Amino acid sequence: MTSTLERHMVTIGGLRVGHGPAVVIGGRVSLRPHRGQVDAREALGERATLVEPYSAADLPAIAALADAVVVGATWTRDIPLVRAAAGLGLPVVVERRPSASVEEWVGLAGYCAAEGNDQVVLCEGGRLDLGVLRAARAASGRPVLADVSRDPGLAAAAVAAGADGLVVAGPGGSGGSGASGRADEAADVRAAEEAVTLVGALLRPESPATLAECREAIDRVDAALATLLERRAALAGVVQRLKPVGGFAGRDLARERALVARMATRAPQLGEERLAAVMNAVIEAGLHLAEERARR
Image 1: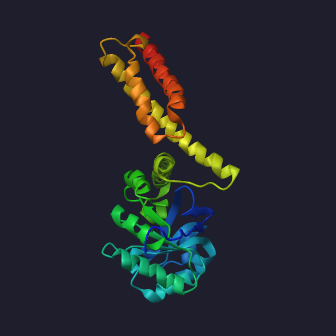
Image 2 (image 1 turned 120 degrees about the vertical axis):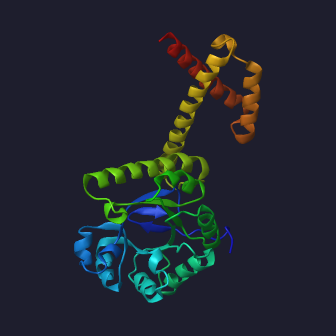
Image 3 (image 1 turned 30 degrees about the vertical axis):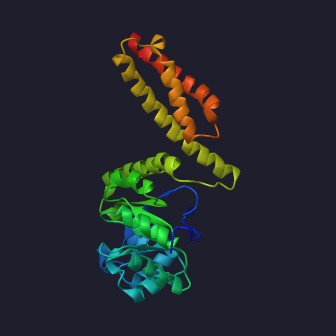
């Protein structure tokens, strides 16, 4: 199997995973800590996005209250439970055991498909192996999530590795509780959304089919562009302090022309003439900013 396989797309809670931009899924909940001693409906309380059962007894409640069922890494060898979970008709998120190969991981998704449920998403969690994530996505054609609940700092790297979405556990899934747990989750979700917006805009190809989707894609690119322009302006300010002659008088037009020529190799459709106009505006904005700061 290769990356040329037709890409699957699975809808989870209204989010299209595997099609278009990467997504952020919050609220992964595991019923395993309850060890079957608490009724699943009582433990969930309200609708959740991703829910991992403790046993088959939890499945009816999950069918009623969850957007997707999680085949947790700790029970991926329990094939009867895997098949029962797939039989709910919900999307199935299949986690990888830390020692499992790509073939084993993808094969487990095949058990779900054998139950007539092809709404399968692979999920890499725990200590993320981004190389395995990328390989599984290419080999299976299925969407792949990265659960960054333990280390939200890996969100950007996971998107860069090709993750179709990021999972951020809710307080019930990550062990947090109360206002502190909710605040931590909100911060983690913001970090994940930032990674999806900025890294995704730079590295994830999109083919929007509607005007709304196209505008959303443009918004992501514009957000990434604004971030890069702000960084460029800061670096340009450092250059002004280091140059013997700063400001507009110190412009190196030959270097600017060479810069535009290099950029044109990355943006041939824009070409040097259009890029020259854009970069002149960028450079002048940075110089004006540097002058304003110097006067303060």
